Image (cartoon, rainbow, N blue to C red; front, side, top):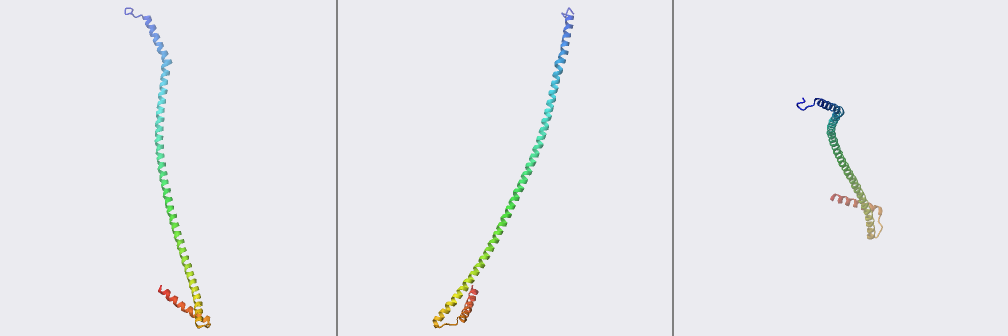
Length: 168
């Protein structure tokens, strides 16, 4: 080997040194670096799995939120419809009550007007009979029997009122 320019004892020492360096590197650097890379690979896998779980959970939460929003909208619309129906009912009840009160007021007013008309007619009748008696007294220039003549005038007025009411 000398002819080739290879020094056997130097080659053995160099091979021994290279093997020793490889063993030292393997023990000191290779295994720790591999362990570090394995741990990093495991963390990356866990992170990816956590991201997938989070994405799945997010999708599930989003569906639940959509469902809750849909239910809330439906419930809100239902409440709005109920309020509108209640408002219509209250408005109808108020209208009916006002109509009843108006009719009652009209009925009372009519009865009051009728009563006042009857009182006015009776008052006019009394005054007219008194005036008629006074006029008759002056015409005859003697005092007449007031009670008898008042009765006569009342019956004439009654007949004229009855005939007037029938004409209306």
